[in-house]
Every structure is written in structure tokens, then in C-alpha cells.
Length: 82
Image (tube, rainbow, N blue to C red; front, side):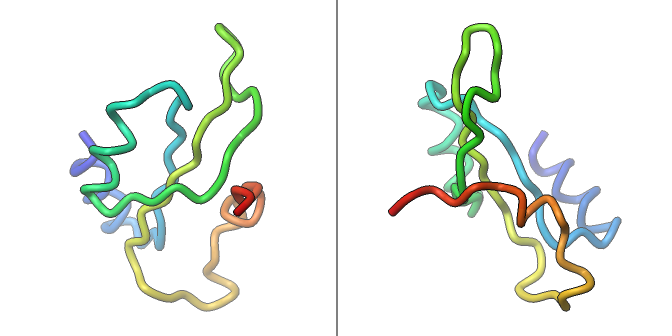
């Protein structure tokens, strides 16, 4: 399923793919990291039933983009505190 999403995004010229994963999901993050998907932030109380944070993950499809090409949604995600 991820491969299909990435293929579609590349064909559409998207520089990134953003995914949200439940914080309690212990399997997905490891599988996604193997596919070079990296955590970039957290959406507090993103899921409602039960209330839970989402870990926001990004797969970069292009190494660089111009400022006008940068997707707005990337700047709206709060960075994970170090």
C-alpha cells in the first residue's frame, strides 16, 4: 500500500509524503523507518476514540525544492522537542 502511495505521489510531482501513525502503534513506525519514512512531529489528540496523539512522519521524495514548491502542510506540523 505504501509503495502504491509513493508511486502515485511521485507521478503527481509531490516532494514529500506525510503520514500520521497512532502513538501506540508499535509495528508501523519500524516498518516505515525501513522505507526511509522519518518522524517529524506530533499532532496532539489527533485521534478521538480513544484520545491519542499521532506521530507525523515524512518520506522525502525529492531532495530539494524551491520555496514556492514547498508544501504548506509541512510548516504546520509542530516539531518534536529534542
